[in-house]
Image 1: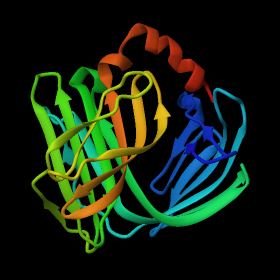
Image 2: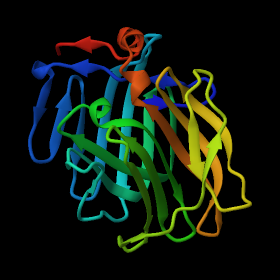
Image 3: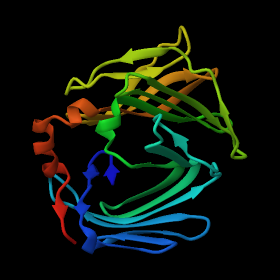
Image 4: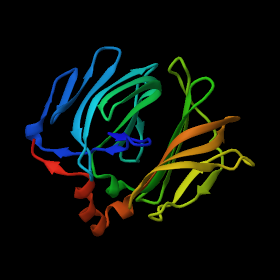
Length: 248
């Protein structure tokens, strides 16, 4: 879990072993945290310790998807990686005890699954998602290891239908402090900009960007990922400081 805000920044991503896992059709427990599907909501019960500064992260997050596409998007020619936009538009309710905060509003829910490590299939990617006046849109650009390109531009309507649209021109954004390249797409003549950088790491950046899609000025959540940098030995040696590994 990642929380951003004055006095409430938290990051927790603990890798756990087989002993810490249990699941059935509606529940998934990993260590002291779990998620359950109620039939209409995905409810996260979070009980973790943040890193690299050890601070408790406890609370509940409820995500109610407004619609759910029926099938995943395949990201590579071999079909080894799939992207599932489970809730392109959703309502979210956050009630945290540690830190003490709560809010509700627009949300988003997706997931990725793969049969081989990401760094084996991709060099880099940029992804972004934004609410539209009616529905939501996602842009997904990736460079694969075989040199081919992935370019997804999908509009998700309020009724759950999906429509591909012509992606606007690709535009470079300012690099991060760790010199990770960032790029997005925006209509010709409507320059995009980075509103805020939320995560700046040696291989990954999460940002808020402003751009123009489908005739609308949007504020999008954006991520850039360098798999070459991720696979570098010095980066792998840094990961345990942010992603500790425990058996239970």
